[in-house]
Image (cartoon, rainbow, N blue to C red; front, side, top):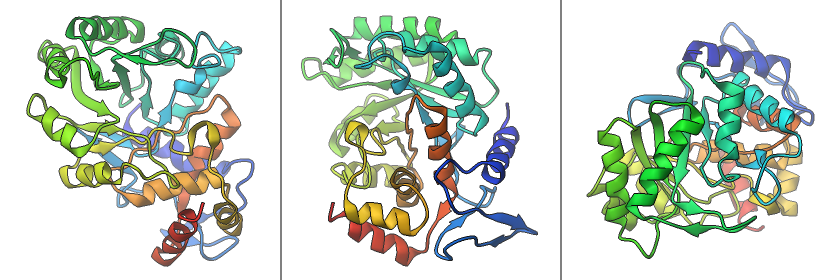
Length: 330
């Protein structure tokens, strides 16, 4: 599936189905947009002239709103999902809706998430980028223990390749920096795999600008995955660094994680614009930075469709300024 197909899917979905709770609709006529509902909100289909895409590493073009597959596993991100067929449907639907960046990790399940991706999508459509991670072990449900030993990471890469049925992983991310292992040693293993043609690009997760700088002395870094959303901006400094260096920023918990996005002010702003709080949160991320690559996850097709509709939301600069102020009160 090439970029044109992904774009066509996006436009088709934008016209035909905007989600269960999405009340505003937009119709494109001769390149002009008609506002429906409140004049402040515009749902505009992506075009070649906007910033709806980003090129990871300079050679992996993706639509900026992707899909995070972590929630497709069992409770506690452990084991198989209770409804395996539903998980496969969600993955296929994500691609149909234009998500050509799918984020996963060997720790999700563990292993089951990567297996589900291969089961549902292999042979992969052209242009689909699967980003996976290694370096976090799973002793049990909801338990995470970093392991950055080079020998372990080398095994992780080989096993991910096999589970995903890939000859090369487009984006491989160090899931966590292991405090017990020098970063250079961990990244050295990834660099070796890159030289061997097993991975294309390398990324990091939950890191500071200083750590990225240090990592880049060993290997080029094309992406960073830190926790970030409209109500949790702890990593603003890392985002700003990524902007300057043209590094993709993949916010995990883009709509607040298990706690969601709460706050009466934010909820009122979403209602005023005829969208859900989650949709507003995702739209804010896309507005926040051109290097932002949100990867919201869900195990529900309906929720997935709601999330993907968020890319159509466009507000004026003044309206975003107001929403920023409201979000800071939550």
